[in-house]
Amino acid sequence: MRDPTTTTALAERVGVSLAAASQHATVLRNAGLVRTTRIGIAVLHSLTPLGRALLDGEPPAPLG
Image (tube, rainbow, N blue to C red):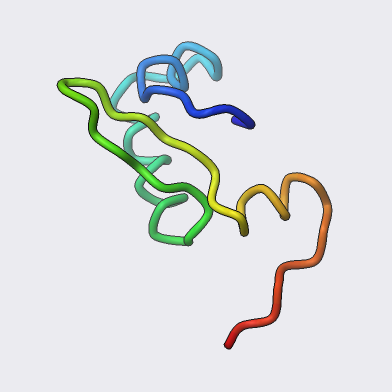
């Protein structure tokens, strides 16, 4: 998920139910790896800087 995407698109991309994709997005959001924005009835997920760094294989920035 390098580009912002909806929950529906995530579910389709990985072949899981919409509910499962939503649950996974919640776990990723709680871990600080994605942010979620509601746009009308759609929910858009995008990577945080930490999520992008991990996908790119970069060490995370130090805390504080």
